[in-house]
Length: 247
Ligand code: SF4
Image (cartoon, rainbow, N blue to C red):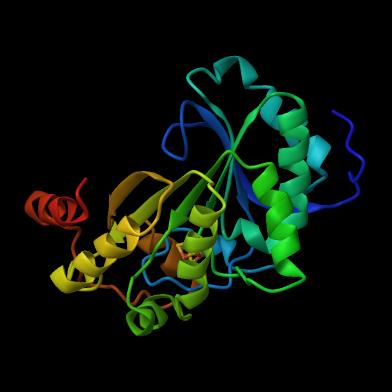
């Protein structure tokens, strides 16, 4: 598992040994430190800061994950999530390159927030794509202005990333957090559905029902929780959104 660029350091907030929701099969998940977005519903606000996190070289990270390799049946492997893993693209690319050298499936769960179609980022992204089996792309909102209100940033580069992945033939899953009154508008869902329909490589679309499990973390960190008073979607609201998205 020796890599040529093992001096790249990754900053990892936490790990999960038996992840079942972030890619196919059972997976080892790295939650990377640092995120440029501030999604109102984020349940991992402890990953926002770019300072801190446990330090790993790619080879050390792979060795840690591989302790659980015997559980990776049905296409399982490694997922890198966050935070925003593209903020540490060099580390993730090297980790995935080593993983592929060892026949391990790789997935990245990203908001696409730092995607930039110009140099130098795009060459780094191409190198990442070569070593990534699945992109799990979280689209927070299809409307750029509503996206900015929800996350602090517009979505133009994120939608551009989805198009780029499609053009390059890379498999992706699309994820969408359904928040009543915030991301549940019928017109927005129809627009999202039309956008997804223009992409040629979406293998799965998932709705993640908004939940309030992270609220206590905000209190602990002294951060204002702006979705206070909003309840998780009802089964009917989820069904309605699923119908519009053709799930
Ligand atoms: S992109 Fe993810 S980690 Fe970043 S603020 Fe949004 S939900 Fe949280």
